[in-house]
Image 1 (cartoon, rainbow, N blue to C red):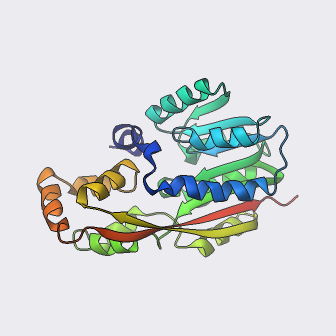
Image 2 (image 1 turned 90 degrees about the horizontal axis):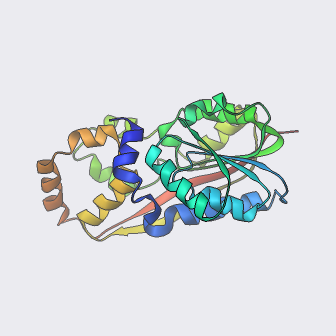
Length: 262
């Protein structure tokens, strides 16, 4: 089962639930960074991994004259986004494509703003950053938001009781921390305009609350994890979880706005 199938089957119908308002709050910070540096006008905006389109709609509301484009691999997510765009009478050019290959559709120095939020775990980070540098105009902006290895530290420690630490580490291709992400951007030629750490406490009331969040937000909707989780194993985890929950942890993300020098 590839990542597109996983998102079609497990994530698309629940993605907008946004438990704990993690994505909404993080993106509000990203929007503040962008609005402080873009006055408006006829911008070209591209969102990589647009999901169900919520972020593009918010950008469209803030920059009504912008021409918006979205790249998404999950067909079901695209269908949901298309319905939203139609309801809001918003024209968005959509590319059904892996974000790793968005450069097939976007010319050099074509966009004023490119965003990639919470999809770094599924792409070749350095490759996409390099393509974004090529695709954004001189003086244009690149907004990146990603969870880091500092996120869900309590859950990671628990997972090590069931899966090898190396296998857990291999699942997460996200940056170690804010500093690593900023270094990647600078190495590609960007200037870091602003970088912040977003941190939010979360509380899982019981195992089923955690499992619903983990699977339907995409956090554990991963082939490696799914390979291990039979109904019997889930039952064992549910029983084991009775001694652990409620469980408090935290989500942590790096939110960076970078600029291509003029």
